[in-house]
Amino acid sequence: FFRFRPFRMKHTLPPLAFEALRLGRDAARENSGDETETETDETEKKKKVPSPFLKSILQFLHQVVTLLAHVAMSHAHALFLFLESARLADRTGADVVAVDFLERAMGLYEEEIVEPKKQKNALALIVGTLQRCVSLDTESKDGLIDKTMGFSARLLKKPDRVSALASCAHLRWGVVGGASAINNSADGIETSLDASVETSSDANAAAFPESHGDPAGALSCLTKATKIATAALEASQTTGSGSGEAIGLLVTALNSYLWFFENGCVAVDATLVSRLMEQINHEVGRLSGALPGDVNAFLAATLRHVQAQKTAGGAVGERYRELTV
Image (cartoon, rainbow, N blue to C red):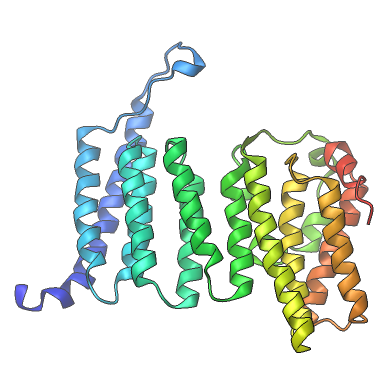
C-alpha cells in the first residue's frame, strides 16, 4: 500500500471523506432533534456546541482532506471537501473550525487552481458556502468575503469577473431565508419570461422580505461589476469589435441590480437602475440594434420583466414605477 501511496490516496480518501460527512450530517440532525426549547431572551440564546462525537468527525475530516490536498490532480476535490466540511462545522456551531476549513479552501484555490474555468467554478462554490454559513462571527466572515471579492476581481475573463462580483454582492446583503432565491441572472443565466410574468399578484402584494447585511457593501460589489462591463465597452469602441458582448455584460449587471432593487435594498434605488438602463439603451441605439442573438434575447427578456413588474401591485410594483426608463 505505501509503495503506491500517492496513487491510491486519490481513490481512497474521497470516499472516506464523503462517508464522514454523511455520518456528521446524520449526527448533527439527530442532535438538533434532541434539543428542547427553553424560554430565554432572544439575545441570550445558548450557542451551539458540537458533541464529542461530532468533534472527532471534524478532526477526522481535517486530517483526510488535508492529505488529499497534497495529492496531485486532486486539488479541486479537496477544495470541495474543505467547503463541505466547513458547512458541517458551521451547522454544528464549530465556527472556529469552519473558518479554518474555509481558509484552507481559499489557500488551495490561490495556490493550485489555475485554469480559468476551474477558478470560476471554485469561486461559485466558495460564494455558495459562505452564503450558507450562519454561525461565523462578523469579523471572520467579512475577512473571508473580502478575500473572495479579491479572487473575483482577478479572474481572467471579464464575463466571469462581472458574474463573480455580482454574486459576491449577495454575501454583503440578502433576504432572510433567501439563499436559494438568488437570481440566476447574476451568473449570466436568463430567467424564463413565463416565470416572471406569471408571478401571482398575491406574492407581489406582500411587503419586501426581511433582510440582513450591509446594503452599501452590496452596492460596492455591483459598482465594481458595472465598472468592468463599462471598461469592456470602452475597449470595444477602441478596437471596433466586441460591443455586443460588452453590452451583454451590462445587461448581466442590470439583472443583479434588479434583484436587489426588487427585494428592497435601500442602497440600490430607482436612480441607479434608471441610469444603467439609459446607458444600455444608448449603446444599443449606437449599434442600431445589431446585437448578438443571445444578448438581444437576454435584454428583451429583462425589459419585459421590468414592464411586468411595473404593473404589479404592492411594494415591488410601486418601486418599479419609480423607474424613469
